[in-house]
Amino acid sequence: MTSPTTPAPATKPNECIIDVHPNIFDLTGKLTVDFYNATNPNEPVTFVHVDQTLIVKVHVELGGRILNYLCDTQLCVCLAFESCGSGPEGEFCQWLKLDPCRTNVYDFEFRLPAGQLPSGECGKSYDICITLGSKDCCGKVGFIFGRCKDLQITVLPADVSGTPA
Image (tube, rainbow, N blue to C red):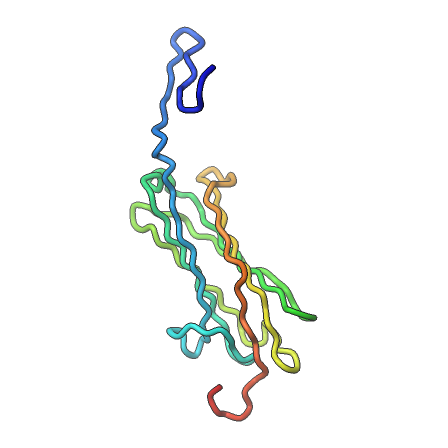
């Protein structure tokens, strides 16, 4: 019996064996998400007012020697949202092509315009879920996957007082 690390013997004349180094699949990754108010895109927030644009930045950092073999692989990031209580739900997705000869860092930015997430009468909390997927250079499902859940953003009614919240 052959173990998983021992290649199977050649079974036909002139049939050869290809050994794949076990460390070649050394893919690592980091996925982070931050929320910003478009009026101050450098300061992360946990809430916005309904009349403000929400920016969601998703940062993907990949590592490992295998990256050099993933040229033209496509990354997909989807942002899904669901209101706590009655209200909307939805999803937005973006695709980027891996270019490991140039970078191992990929940034996605989603802009949810004012009013996209209604505040309700008193304010409303939204659950946000981020899904990372991939397709190989042939368009088939790849092997890079990730997710961020347990993210929330609070949308407050418009600030009509004119004073900063």
